[in-house]
Image (tube, rainbow, N blue to C red; front, top):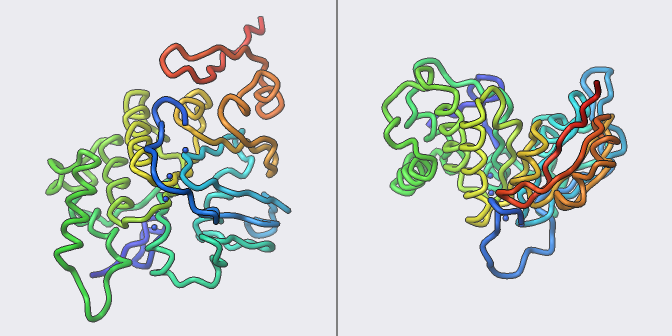
Length: 294
């Protein structure tokens, strides 16, 4: 089966799955959490050409968490996620995946451990939903083992979990933004990994579809996966995250639970926004209310 890289829109290998506590993402109690962090970056220097975005950054994603990375535009959130998913090579430092150097692992090995949904994935022209979700099974294909019954089971399960079964025979290009995002999430679910990296999964969606997608992410987290997402909406981040990483100017300035990170002082330091923090009456998580400036 041919492979498709949704980042570049070209044929190529792609990226695999693990599990944390606010209302929507209350985790299922399971056995002992693994001692090794699913993914960790140490001394990272990240750049595009000559422009350094991140320098000397250390970050660790707790096992079993729904970690959300927040911060102002241009602070390095997506750049960091790309480095954790090996679509951007650090100029210095290293990333470890389950304790193994990410740079030493092969593409298919990574794709069975970590799944990455980029910010603007590109689908092949005229591809159907079923075929796109099937691309998530790339890591399990070999010259001697092509499509199998287990691949079909994984694809059907991913489409059922994301509510996309009824869209199976439709072209991806014909779908609404919310439907397309569910299909892309189905594709990464079909990879059957414990670690999912999602770069701005709610971008360009209206509020209903944003909540719909994040509810789906919360469900994946409750089922035992570790999720790492970049989000712009601080209130939605605080509602769904079990662990938050706040960045500014390429540095991590705060980490912890939503209650620890989303404070009036923290929001002003990170975003330059004066605000009040109240309790969300639905989720009992922090809710940012900007102060009137006039």
